[in-house]
Image (tube, rainbow, N blue to C red; front, side, top):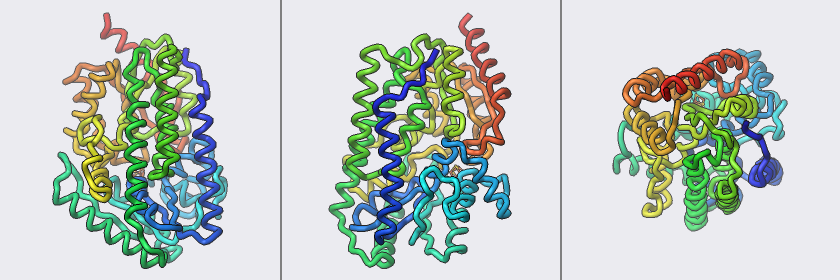
Length: 413
Ligand code: SF4
């Protein structure tokens, strides 16, 4: 049965994240220019300024959900008239920040001077930031990112780079600070370095039994979002990968009697991490990997890392704008999943249909059919909401996941 043991990198992560949120509050009080960004906005740009800090509302909402206050914050937004059908990240964020940081385990985020979103994941995100733009009268910069059905085209990259240059000028104008490209380049190097170690960490899933659970990787994604471009992030991921490799070497793995190697498709169920991992562990099942954790720099339709070293920082950041699953068409998603199934010897796939994230969930039925019928791998679809626990039923989900394990047994006979 799986043991939920806090590793040294787990303890280190808690310190890093807590300090990061506290530092932001202190620096904002001391006069830093504050930018709120969507997760994919290149944070390294802000490292090019002396006193600009960035906060990531989506990541803060995930933290709130993980700490058990997702539902109360969603309800606060609903009481203000926001529909229960909106993404729970947005509801948590508005419930928190229209109530002066209420319930946030991190004390909320310092109020922004600039909002920067993009449209490569979903249009809801730009609308969500627009609410603050209207309510607080704060400028909102929207990056327009082309949708992709194949590798990014050169002209798309150039189009994105030109918008980054506009963004730099906008921050210079609004903050009164001068941009230093060398500082941004250093931050970019730190991110590229961090990414290499992240891949080493994820590769531990290929071990039999797996050296990690997807739940470990979900939790460890947080600093990529909130500390991108920092040497501390690169150092943390080096520590994480080294520790994980050493544990595998010593035979210390989360599910020593691993009988079922599963793949998760969609955003992490933040409110269920410990419960779901322990309950699956009791069945000797391990969700060893997830499409979600591979979306931190993969080539379109693949798990392979993009070759970022050969690109200039702005080009590299533009190249990464296509890195997540949501803007990918069905063929790209299918190709990446096929590779994951083959390389990690996956026995079954759990498609988590997410009530909040429609863009991630929309193609899952077609993808499920492809995996089941074309690749011959058993699958199941469960209903989840990544941050609103009211839209998840543990018993219903487990009845289905146990049926998946039975199908795997059946296929092995
Ligand atoms: S709907 Fe999905 S992509 Fe959009 S903000 Fe919510 S979680 Fe992110």
